[in-house]
Length: 289
Image 1 (spheres, one colour):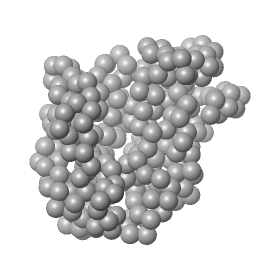
Image 2 (tube, one colour):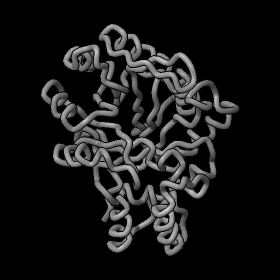
Image 3 (cartoon, one colour):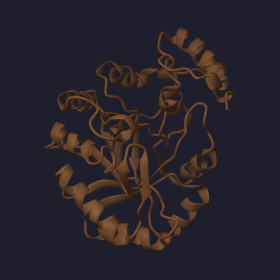
């Protein structure tokens, strides 16, 4: 039986297949993707389909994704968990600058609260650890915000297992976000650590940034696509749905939040939760690592 629900920090239940908002912004996560009404329609449909975890960030746009979440979903229905991120400053398309000074993290969190129209952010994730600021100072700033009731739980993005261990010595960590998918399992040690401590793992690029779908197939994943396409055919679904189903079967702490600006792709992604892979399917897919 594949668990449908994960409890963040052991007490905040979410459906494991969520929705990520990065694709609601333009190329390089900069500017709008298109008409706001289209993004609003996708967000509302995700919640109609039972999504209870919305994953966003202050620098998607920047600011645009958070504003769209509020426009589409406020007042938020009971049980909807909003996760956002801070700690990165944008100066242009694909231009990312890490900023982990405590005063800047506080300012970013307060700005997210205003855009999202929230009094408390359910899950606030440090988008990147700043190598120029002691980890204790960065997490200390988030801990202070948590004590003040501005955030409920703390997460980390793009960390090693060793960094997670160090962070756990300083404060409670509810989640991590690292790149992880059918063909990229460099974060396997981190996944095992999350399993051991009941920490949610929100894999980014769960569909390989499109490479694991039928739309875009790169030469480096041709073999993997062939295997997933074959399994997909036996289930009557798409290779992308197999990639998401594999994540849900792979570990009970994996909570993928695939993003899209398309209603059709949203429906396809969410239907992945109903795909049941056999032991043979999983063996073939696991062997692609």
